[in-house]
Image (cartoon, rainbow, N blue to C red):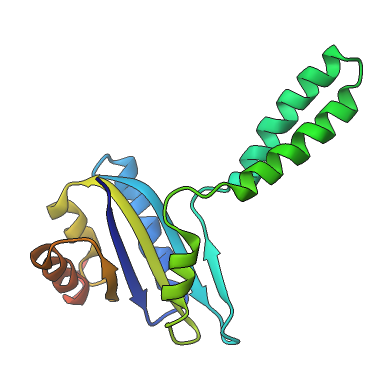
Length: 165
């Protein structure tokens, strides 16, 4: 079962920086992320979600390939490419994996303007190594499925002094 953690930051770019650190940890096999989304609330109050996976583009590429292949067989490769790409893009845009977008918008709506939040869905992790990396990054946990004890450990790491590197 995956663990959900949502952390709010007083800076518009901090959530992106922390997500980059988590992606670096994922490359080192210290954490397995199912999804990691940055929500930014602009000065005008508009909320923008920066998804980790762009399903619209992936759908357009996959659909274009299959459309071109089928179109070539039917002697209409350009039509097949266009039809496949558009169908794939629509399919990708309507697909929602990972964290529910409505949930993220609901939580992000409570943020102050010019702030951000990081929503992470974690399959597995090496807690000590992840907490070490997150130490001193700031932020306030706003939602989580962690136990109270694990939530306290994470918040303590976020609040700790940033180690000299």
